[in-house]
Image (cartoon, rainbow, N blue to C red; front, side, top):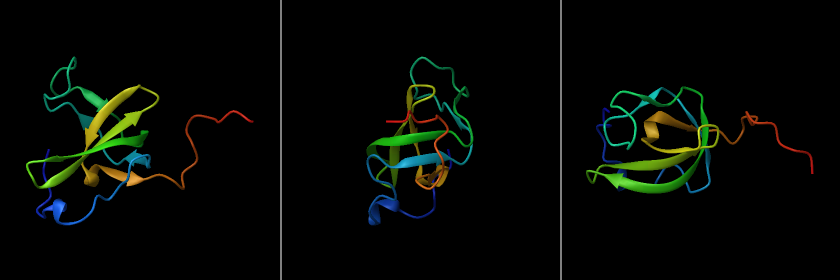
Length: 97
C-alpha cells in the first residue's frame, strides 16, 4: 500500500457512511485481514460496496471500511482506491416493490 503524499486528515473524509463506492484497482491482503493469506485478493477492480466505517491510519489518511455485498466481506480501503458509485446502475438487480 502506497500512502498519498498529502495528509488527508487535514480535510474532511472524501466519503460518508452509507456511500456506494466502486473499487478502482484490485485490493490485496497486506497481512491485516484475518483468515486470508498475504497477497490474496480481497476485492476486484469495479467491485461495488458501501462505506460502513471510517477510521484513520498513521495519523495521515482515512481508511474506509467497505462492505462488499457479493462477497459479504468488509475490507479497509484508501480514498485513492475508491470512487463514488451513486450514479452507477446496481450490479445486483433490485426487486420490484
